[in-house]
Image (cartoon, rainbow, N blue to C red):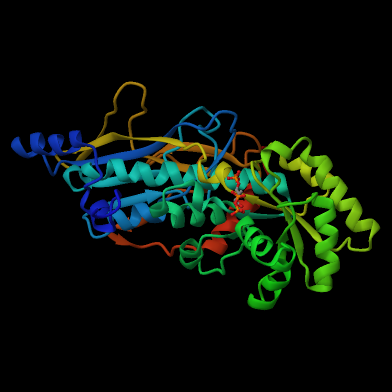
Length: 404
Ligand code: PCP
């Protein structure tokens, strides 16, 4: 049957996932000895997903891996930076800029934009979900909702965006964290079929699974959630961390009321410390009401794994001719090499042309801080990549200060 239909690491690195018209462009330029014309190309957001006022810039580390070793200089804003599509004056933000012989990176425009648009989409959705959840736990359960080859990538950026944990084993490995999860309905069904009692699965989980794994048991497989939750609390006592509700769609009349009932029954019966984990169709819109109803944690799959992308475009905005950089761009784009500056007090950005002074914050007049940093010089990565935990904190710090 042969291998799965996906691109291997080497395929991406070789540019095999690129669009054919970049190869034809290279052929044309080579034909006229223009392959190594030095250009300055920038990546800017064309649009954010509908209703989004900001997005999380993500995927830069993959872009650096792609371009590493090529005679290129790369400038970019820090990964995890929360940004608006345009600065205070309406100029689109150059989140990444590449400078060097065009022939060295022409074919990488496709994978480069692919990395940035998907990672930013996932991280932004995760941060919106986490913002809605506040201090409630958000677990990324999306590995089954995306192509297995990118499940680790999806988990990585779900975590960077704000998820507190991921269920995907390989994703957790890339993150350097322990995978987190609960139990599937299949476990309950087997105990019911073979031993005649599905609640034995809770005991069996407690008996066989490592001590440091929180005991979160499923309480919606056969009976009413509130009844099963009480049984679980009585059955596992203090060893029970929480109960998971993944109520089937056909039974989800009013999920908030179901949670309220479970919460009340546990409270009335002296098990109020038992947490309620909810999964199935969860996103930032439904979380506030479920939180108010008593949910303590959320398992989120589809909403984050199939997050709408952040639509980026890459454009040449300057060409070096006889040793001089000439600003030039297509219609609709702004020519010239640029830098992004930010007033962290007002979370206001200003884009300036290279060589222009440091702008002042258009709101408070304070000096701004340059966000654009040189991250690659002559193909060598010159910037220490933040570890995922640090990145996550950087994202959450900014998101806490913004409205959804
Ligand atoms: C699914 C699984 C995922 C949840 C739902 C993600 O439950 O537990 O974590 O849902 P979402 O994509 O709507 O956000 P089931 O399909 O019932 O699977 P299982 O029995 O394995 O929990």
